[in-house]
Amino acid sequence: MCLMANRALTEQAFLVLTALVDEPRHGYGIVGEVERLSDGRMRLRIGTLYGVLDRLTADGLVELDHEEVHQGRLRRYYRLTDPGAAALAAEADRLSVHVRAATSRLRARRDRLSEGGA
Amino acid sequence: MCLMANRALTEQAFLVLTALVDEPRHGYGIVGEVERLSDGRMRLRIGTLYGVLDRLTADGLVELDHEEVHQGRLRRYYRLTDPGAAALAAEADRLSVHVRAATSRLRARRDRLSEGGA
DNA sequence: CACGATATCTTGTCTCCCGATATATGATGT
DNA sequence: ACATCATATATCGGGAGACAAGATATCGTG
View 1: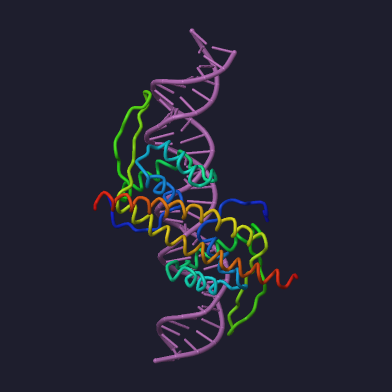
View 2: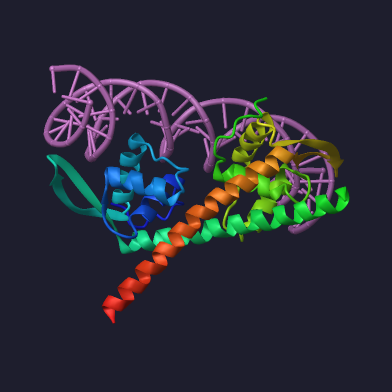
């Protein structure tokens, strides 16, 4: 366990954390929620999920909530921790700066080009 | 050259494209601009830059603008192409969806927790 | 009773980020 | 004069991580 590892989150880790903000979810539930919250554009691969989940657990950003058997199949539910919520907030902030920089510059470029082309 | 490769951009590629929206820049200029546009939080490593630049060039998202010698040292300037601007806009849009999902859920979580804690 | 969906996890491959290194010139300091 | 640092290009090896594919198991459906 390494709670102090505040390296930048990967995009997949970001999406997993986001999917867990509302309520604890199990593996397949996380995959479905990620697809939903990204407007169906991001499909988290099942092989990717468990690696991400292991790393997030090791860093203390998520933790095992409980296990239950649903229709004969085991479901392992994960929960967002407070450090996890803080890390997600920090990463969202960081990304938001990049997105704003890109969109404002692109807008200026479009204005510049349409002016020259008119 | 593979113009049709619309795989998702890496974060570093996103930042390089953003740095080139305003005007053509050379390698070191890109590094400095990335640091500026990320509020000093992202320092693009020089070893990373040239790999990113090679891939973006191969995909037709940037292209060589011109070369000039400044104070005895060669500067190789790169320029954003129209497909590059389109790819950057699409990626900014995609990230923006993720950021909004995270922030709105985190806000709801904070409200929920402060309510229970009050 | 085969097949697909649900559910977990492992393994191999491939991309790519990063640190280190190489090379070269101009500017700065002592 | 000479060392050192900033600028500027590029390459290489290591390691992290995403993804495809497969293993294993149960339930529902046709």
